[in-house]
Length: 444
Image (cartoon, rainbow, N blue to C red; front, side, top):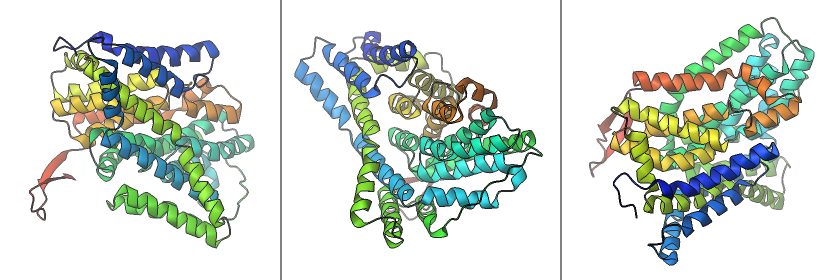
C-alpha cells in the first residue's frame, strides 16, 4: 500500500518494464512486433507480483485475479470474441468482396481516391478492424496508382485514413469496446458523441483528396457483387444504432452471415463452425492482454502507482478542459509508446475514468476522447501495424505515407477543438418512463 496520498512512483516499475521490453526490442530488432506483446505483459506482471514485500505473495495473486476477473473486463473479452466471430464469418462468405465491388461500380472514375477512402470508412465501420480493411483495399489502391499519376503514398494514406475511421467508430472495433467498457457507457451513446467530433475530419479529408487527384482517372475492372452478402454488415450497424444489446447484435450478425453463407453454398455447417472458431481465435491475444493488463493494473493500484499517476497528471489541472486534455495526452503518450491503440486504451482507461469522475466529465465524452486520440496517433506512427502493412503492400517506406496522413491529423485537430469548445454539448435528462428514477443520457 502507498504511504502517501500522492501515491508511490516505484509501483509503476511493471509499466516501465513492459515499455522497455516492447520499445527496446523494437528498436534493436527494427520491428516493433518482433517481441510478442503477450510475453512482455507476462514479464511485467511477474515483476508486479514480486514488489511490495509488506504483502504476502498469495494476497498479491488474489489482488491480481480480482482485477483480471473484473466484470467489465470479462464482458469486454466476450464482446471481443463475438466481434471476431462475426467479422470472420461475414468475410468468409464474401461480404467484403461484394461491398468493395459494389462501391467501385458506383464511384465516379475521376473521384477514385475519394471513393477508396469512403469504401475504407464503410468496411472498417462494418468489420470493426482497420487491419482487415487495409489488407482488403491496399492492393486496389496500388492498382489505381499504377494507372494514374497518383502517388502510392497518397493511395495508402487514403486507405489507412478510412480504416482508422471505422477503427474509431465501429460498434465491434476493439478500441470502441475497450473505451466503452473502461468508461462505463453505452456503445450507441459513445458513437453519437464520437461521430459528431470526427465527421468534419472525414468531410475535409474527402475534399482534400478530391482536389489533389482532380483530373486523374483509372480503368477499374468492375467485378460482380451480391446485395444479399452486404446485408449482414447493414444489419449489425442498424441494430447496434437502435440500442439493442451488443451481445444480441453480434449473435444476430453471426447467425445472419452464416445463414446466407450456407444458403448460397459458401459454407457447409462444419465450415461455418470452423470460421466462427477462427474468428474467435483471432481475438485470443487481445483478450488475454486485456485480462493480464487489468490484473497488473489492480496490483499497481494497490501499491500506489495509480494514485501517483493521478497526482502527476492532475496536479496542474485546474478545469474540466484541462482534465480532458489530460485524458487525451495520457492515451496519446501510451499509444505512442505501445504502437497499439487498443492496448493504450486498456492501460489508460482506468486512469481516465478516475480523472473523468473527479472532474465530472461525461463518460460518453471520456470514452470518445480515448478513442479519438488513440486512433489519431495510431494512424500517424510509422512503426504502427497499419502503416507497416500498407507500406509493405505498396513496397514503399511508411514514413513517406505521413505526408498524406490527412485524416489521422484532422481527427486529432477535431479532438482538440472539441475540448476547447465543449462540442458536442451534452445534457442528462430524466427518463419519463423509468419508475426507478434512473437517469438517462441524451445528446442535444
